Length: 406
Image 1 (cartoon, rainbow, N blue to C red):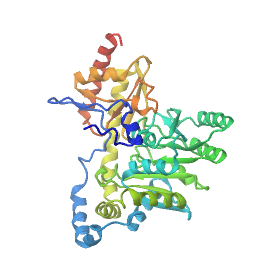
Image 2 (cartoon, rainbow, N blue to C red; image 1 turned 135 degrees about the vertical axis):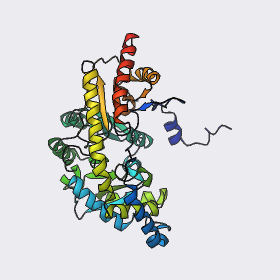
Image 3 (cartoon, rainbow, N blue to C red; image 1 turned 60 degrees about the vertical axis):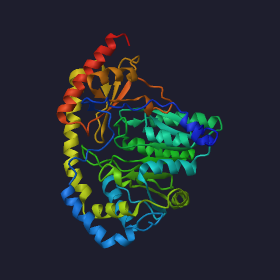
Image 4 (cartoon, rainbow, N blue to C red; image 1 turned 180 degrees about the vertical axis):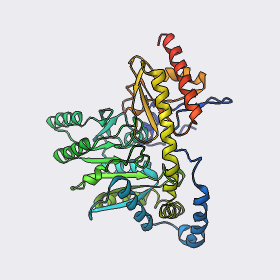
């Protein structure tokens, strides 16, 4: 049966979008996966976390098995406020409020859903988080891109764009940014640019949508204060997640923003799902309260940092004449740009697959899919030996690809 005539235009348009896909591992052979985008929980302190699971089920089961508050568990919100203050110096004001989301991905969808009318302009970084592109595309936003350098979004370039739009009688609804250890670039937006971005928001009357999933994974000192910490006008919508420090399986994210924004999100969330799983919220609360996330980070941060350093050393040894890359101060990714702009990393991927190594082409991280000579490498999931071997195999694949004549 053909269901096309039953589907609405919104989903039909989205399904017709041709997006360069993530690589699927070949069947029946070992593959080194630089293509992952996940934290590595193989060293999660389960022995310390498990007793709290038993405790919360014994003491709170009647409440946690019921429908949850749509806005979220108040005790969880208390713990999340402590988290924001500790990691990104964010307290907020009396005009700010919080709502719990089914992961920060739901925040991306719902914030754009309540703000964007079809055809509204928004600004994203080039490159930016792929799933944000999907959420904004689904909600019919017109995305405009601003380039990054090693210090994140070029706010002077943003200012030029805003000036041009104003001269044409146009405005943007919001700028979406991942300011700490961005996915995919790994870049961090310095304080001067954070302040400049906020000044531009005030001057040109737009909102800032700040997505800070990686601030907890800092390898060189504390993450910089959130842009939201500068917010005196209620212009910044902050979202984060527990996926990198407790579990993506919990599906716990949140939005911290002006009360009016939270009020609109609450109305939309009631329609969508009536609230996040009560079980997940109670588990997250008791784990945060008892420092399970800190126990994990004590293990994960030096472990990830060592893997990052090994990957950087291998890239410098084998690719120093062929490419340049970010040196992230945190997060999960190193972003490589080949010096030869004719390199097509979707084609390079086919050579890498034959060698038994996978990466993600940078192409889908651009809202217009226009940049072909970049790749994202994950260092959290592969072992140290796999990183060494994988970069060697990637170099072999790259040399073979070049010898084929591009």
